[in-house]
Image (cartoon, rainbow, N blue to C red; front, side):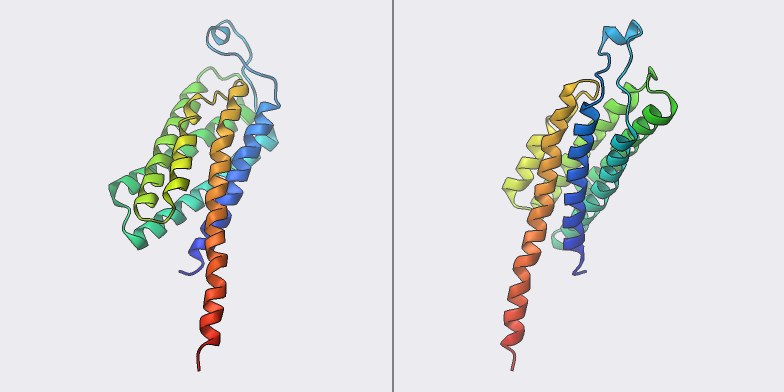
Length: 203
C-alpha cells in the first residue's frame, strides 16, 4: 500500500503534537496531592475538557501510527512476538490512560483509585512502545538513531507524575514521536522526484 507510509507519518506527527500539548495543558492546572498528602484528604489534580480531548486525540493517532509502523515492519522483515506483544501492550496502556482521563473529567477527579489506572497505563504504554520501537528498528523501518531517541524518552514516562510538574517529562516522548512522523514524511517526499525522473526517462 503506497499510502501506508504517509498515513503513518501524518498520524505520528498529529499524535506526537497532541501528546505534547496535552501534557502542557494538564500542567497548567493546579497541582494535586502526592503520597501521604492524598491519604490525608488532599485534592488530586483534576482534568480539563481540552486536556482530555487532546489526550484522546493523541491516543487515537498514536494507535494509528503504531499500527502503520508494525505493518511496515511486517512487510519488510516481520514483527515477531515482540512486535505483536508491543502492539497489545500499547493498546492496553492507551485504554487505561483514556479511562483515567474520562473518570477524572466526568466522574470524580478525586477518585482514590486513580493511580491504579494511571500507573499501569503508563507502564503498559512504555513497555509496548519500547517493543514496537525495537521491532521497527530491527526491520529497518526507522533509522537506529531515531529508534534509540524514542527508547530514551520512554525512560522518562514512568516518572512523569501527572499530579505535579513532572508531567512535563512526558513531552520529550511526544516530540520524539513527532520526529518519527516527520522523518517518514521526509522519506516519502524524497521518493517523489525519483519517480518523476524515471518516468521522464521512459521512451
